Length: 399
Image: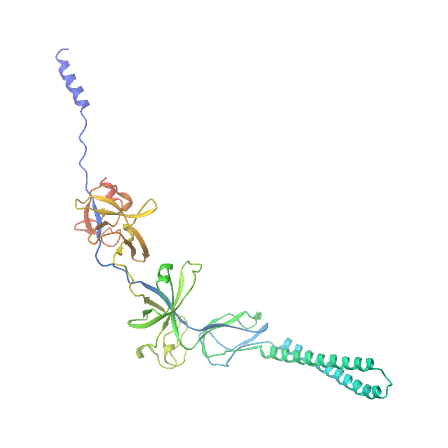
């Protein structure tokens, strides 16, 4: 027993000793270096080319469509017939109005003759003044009925002419809403026409951009079909309120395009699909419905900085980022969010040269040490220097 006591005591003391903590594994992390220049300050928005003046053309009377004389994408001239309704019912209304006018005119003739017979009798005192006054009132009432019947005839004649829908100005048909045999209501759009003349690009921007974009601002326009030929544009109109998309509609008028954008006669106007439809050269050479980009002038503040969207962290109700210090440790720093962009976010509150954690911001802790590697533009998995680039879980593994 005495020989076993030292061995048991040694085993007991070994069991009470705390194990040594494992060495911390420092994982790589993608880091973005803030530059002095506010990158991404020039905003670009996409829209489509539209005619400045467009209108929905509709019949002023209802009826059954008898003939449609215009097709989608067809250029039309002023006064050209586009469609016709069946005029049978309206012609019957006109015939009834004319018959009512004839009856009213007959009553007026009789009233005039009766008044002419009573006037001599009043002079000879065979009748009283009241009888003559009654005849005069009957004659005036007959004249009023004639006037009303004549107005009804004119109205019925106009409605008969309204069965033919004509174009008020030259343009191109961009939408067709009625077909032969369809019963259309008065005022229901049958065609949509884009009038010849000035073209514009319509885009939708955010509220902050709209407030800083007054009418008259010069912008640059690039057509997707002609990216190497920029056009000059001017902001013509900014919608006073947001729409259902929570964006603001901005209309940019295009100046006269260069000669290489104007097509030859007969091939300068088109459907939204780009099919040539004919017409004359000039501003109409910019096809309707094509896509275009407008580039707004830079309005970046000196303290504005661009960051990847993946670098943004939410600290309570405020925005923040993870700053990598000189010892490659992470520290949370608040920033002011200035706006969102398609390629990142705009913030203030960061000094030029600061290193920001660009990926995995929700998987790290305060004071955690990382091994910085350059940000590769996203949560990439391609090898970097012989090893896989970190994702959102790589930095967490080092905690």
